[in-house]
Image 1 (cartoon, one colour):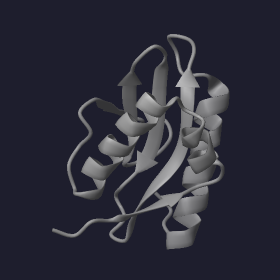
Image 2 (image 1 turned 180 degrees about the vertical axis):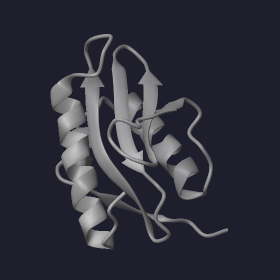
Image 3 (image 1 turned 60 degrees about the horizontal axis):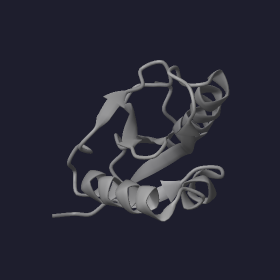
Length: 112
C-alpha cells in the first residue's frame, strides 16, 4: 500500500496545529486514512470550492474542519483548517480554500 505524502498549502499546517490536542489527533487520524486511500469517517464534498475537494468534519467541544484535495497521484493537499463557529461555513474560509485550490491546480497545469 502506497502512502501519499501531505502537502500543506498556505498556513493550513499552522492552523491545524492551533487546534486543541484532541482535535489535532483526530485530524491526524483522518488524514492518515486519506493517505492510505480511504475516506475519512465523517466528510462531505466541497464542490463549490473545486472538483475533488472534500471537508473532514470533527465534532468535539467545537466544530473543526480540514479541507483537502486528494485527486492527485503524488500528494494530498491540505487547503485549509479552521474552527467552524456558525452553521454555515464562513465565506472567508471558503475563499481561502478556493484560492489555495486554484494555486494547486496551477502547479499541476490543471484547469479543472
